[in-house]
Image 1 (cartoon, rainbow, N blue to C red):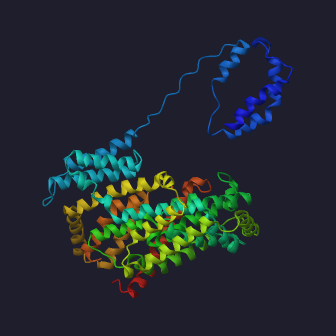
Image 2 (cartoon, helix red, strand yellow):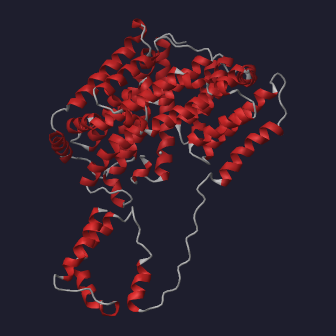
Length: 526
């Protein structure tokens, strides 16, 4: 608003010191002079506020009053409904009601358990259809469970004391520290400087940088929006590659597509690289599958297929979604200039780096030392708060963490109650027995269930919602048988996202299924 205030302040100067205000009927000449004198500044203000403040329709009546012309009355704008989207809301609720009252309750399942299953199914339908934000929908679901006396208050909120959920929340604060201190940007820019002489090298540099940062940022969205998309956008625009323009294929589309597809492997490499990884571990533990030294075990199981995925993804994209620009000799120079502008590592960056290095070491050696993963994360956050790297008010103002805490806890709590009431095991054994009767063998069943779980992800906008909704049920069936930033950047079309996403899904299924199985067999997992 400062430039608009300046415009108003300069208006008397444009009229000149000796020009007096004229009556409305004689104002044309001075106004015309003022209009020409202030045109550049007015144009700047309009460009600056085009998104934040649209042109005011009130200007038309004012000009009409000055000229005496009659202007037809403008019809008032019809306000949109600010609440839940009616159709998705009714559909999500209707699915739960139909299950509760129209589907016969199977033998062996109580009315209470069936009611909770209906509420849970309605909750999952809401995650898919999105009638409300996820947190709001989860609140309505848990309120319904309490109001119908399906769960007590203590049962409904029992998962809020879950250590894994708090580990996820604290990890989000670590991500905030990476963004605030600029350490994440420095790491990514450094890899651009090292690898960025060619377009393919640039893609590898960004992929490796994300893999290095991933253990401290449990969100692909946070890494994309806070670190990598700004860097990719800057590199692309410098090369003349613009979003929502045919020139996007020069460089930007390739870098965004490669980063999007490669982030799957970055998120899968470390337990703390994605919130859904931690949720998987918790849900597995509730099903009786406890993992010793989870952080280390996860890395052992994932590092080989994840590194292979990071290696082949840029090559596949380079050949099937080739950029028009093959060499980027200016990228290392731009990165060097950016690093020079950033200067030496600040105090906060050094503390952030040291804290994360210590946290990773404790995650690795925590079991031997008797220090849990969540305790390590909490100690790290205490260091960041006590040194001023993060302020508590910044943690309070980080909605992603608190929103995740709430709806994670609701989903995990409902899932745990369903498991305790025997609902999940009932259906898992039912399906599992049929699969066993088909004499397919556990490797085939394992593969089929994984493919089904993989394909069903297309129903969900969130990987974590996908895990919370389906992981327990699919894991139970395996046991029973023995076994949304990148697209918004404007460089990719929806068709390109789905087409290459489907292609890389097949590649990743094969990579993790074949290479992963060899590694897991060697580690004695089966």
